[in-house]
Image 1 (cartoon, rainbow, N blue to C red):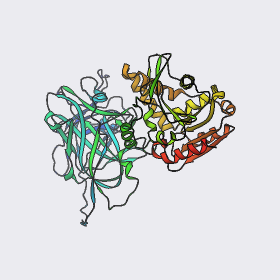
Image 2: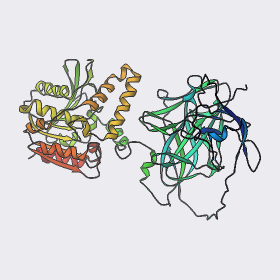
Image 3: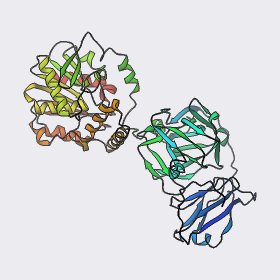
Length: 548
């Protein structure tokens, strides 16, 4: 029997009553075979792909007779027939009817078209989407898609696929699709014609295969998906770069689309945005980031912090050796001691906008928390916020400070709370910014993001990422500060959070309510990144609170 190129894992052993249907897919008007048609069973992960002459063969054994065989080809009407009817003939022709194209009047208007690039741009060789027919056929034949969101009417110029590695004995046949969105998943293919490519190594330039679709005149607005699928087996394998913690979508044939939050393939598009058109949503949504609106873009602040002297100022810096770690710290100014504690995976330089202002009135001590910044940690134990509080107490003792003030951001705020509970006699006043007292106080989207991050870190199991793994695990499992613990805090506390913070607002309000001498301030139009984005307001609030 002639070996056919299939896109599904066919059963190795057939039952005695196996029924294989063979046929040819033909266009009605042109009476010509249609090559590489995806033929599958509705809502099932079963199917095949016709060859270059439209021929196919599909096993219908064991399928419910009421199930429908489904074919969808851009430019043709959808085809569906029950398995029962198909089993009546051993060989048949499936005729697809061309769609009627409406020729609409074209009004030419001068538009302000702006070039943009959206999607996943990474060219990493460490996180990869593998296309390997020899390894596992059912993974190879799957279709993967990435979500986009165009705030204004936009024309797609290029579809870019970042390919880290390509090995094949012949051109690799692949297909692109563009889908509308329904209930958060890909729905209808909007293309009028198939976009099929025979990919060769020479077509990949600087790690990217760029497909020019400008002549297809593809306009999009709102949510849409771009999907890719490999159609024929080949000797070799392809590795596509992928971005961690981005949501991708997968399906096999006409099975249900499934969401995968572990990683998404590096698909990005060049578009021309009609700036004169109606805006349906904030332009930033076009980036497709799953944490859009939850974690803001802080790249400009990171660049500024890196160029500052803080975190690398040897004239004001020093180390304290405690068990299993060397804590790095810097001191600025004179007056009452004020410790600034950064967030998870941060460092001293994150306070580059606070140090020069606060150090005019206070002795500011900024610390790289153990395992972060320039503070080393050689232990193999899991990190805890209680341990971090013990480190701050050890540093205060080392500096001869009996009573201190603390301003802590995120994890630094949690450490401040632990310090207040464990060392009440050593704390004067406490400011916490975007802190929580138990894990469920964090937005579920961020929690899901961190769970995926930890899963990847555990799978990679790289020694150089050991601290990162401990930090993520700590955020997922801690803290566990009870309302009874909060009730015991007698120091004045200023509780700060953003109205768009990753910390749930009712959780922030609860903390302020449960501490006897707490004040609450919710910053308007603010995310979790208050020390970066609202530095002047924060500095003023800290000085006012400490000056009372």
